[in-house]
Structures are given as structure tokens and as C-alpha cells.
Image 1 (cartoon, helix red, strand yellow):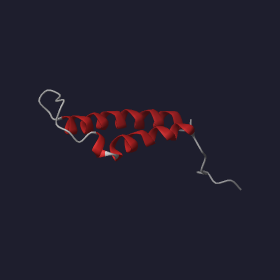
Image 2 (tube, one colour; image 1 turned 30 degrees about the horizontal axis):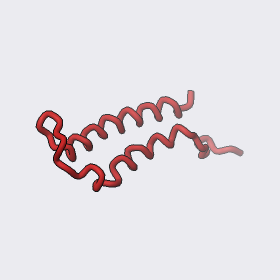
Image 3 (cartoon, rainbow, N blue to C red; image 1 turned 90 degrees about the vertical axis):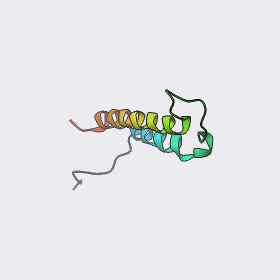
Length: 67
């Protein structure tokens, strides 16, 4: 008997790795310049990832939910 919620591999889940990789190495973005509207790059970079991660989560959700 098959489980109702059996695990299945879905390539859309790989999109969830992008925010992790993008923020995993702070030595790449740990600097003050350039600034974005007076905000140091370090904070602006992380703030942009908040929106990108939300977008990616939405895409993965709609592509993987079962009808």
C-alpha cells in the first residue's frame, strides 16, 4: 500500500539551494561599497535575497503542489 505523502524527487526543489548558496559565503559580499540609496552593499545584498527567496519559494510551491 502506497503512502499518501510518499517522497518524490522533483528538480524544482533545486531552486531552494540558490538562497543558501547566495548567502553562505559572506566574505564575497562583506563590503560597504557600492551603496544602494545610502545602504551599504552588505545589507542591500541580504535584503535583495529576502525578495528573491520569497519569489523562489513561490515558484517551487506552485510547481510542486499536487492538483
